Image 1 (cartoon, rainbow, N blue to C red):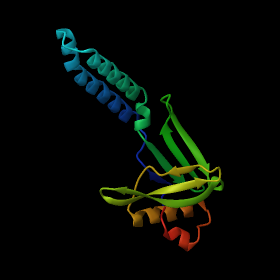
Image 2: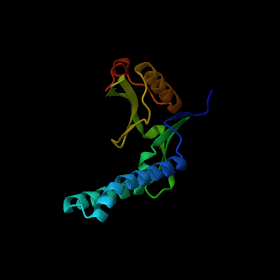
Image 3: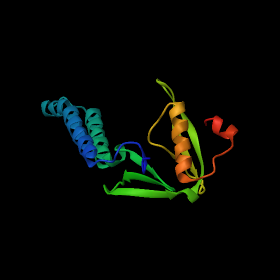
Image 4: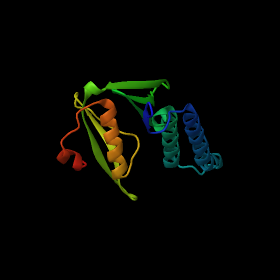
Length: 165
């Protein structure tokens, strides 16, 4: 038996670097025609304002690229560790013990590929966490059952488990 289940992709700083490099290249390519128009004297005030706004958006995306990397859930016996990269660029992990969990449910996401399901964990504090990956209904039910088993929490009644939210 595996010691842990991992939902979502591993957190990697390489992805952040790739996203940041892509943002710089895209901003540069989008700015090139505007820079040429500025040098030729053809750029209006509206164009200059939109150019500045686009550069501010690129700067904000570059700054917060860490949020685009995603997160991963690691489910072990009695706990879930949620791993992500914080805004300051440092890796962070939040550990949730089984005693903090009120319920483990399925959440439905409608997409072009049909219905996909995520695992929803409701904490006793009222906060709801959604798993980073989606599954078809059968896979989601199997993952949910394995999470409940590993956390050692009491599964809800059969009627509540049968209806996804």
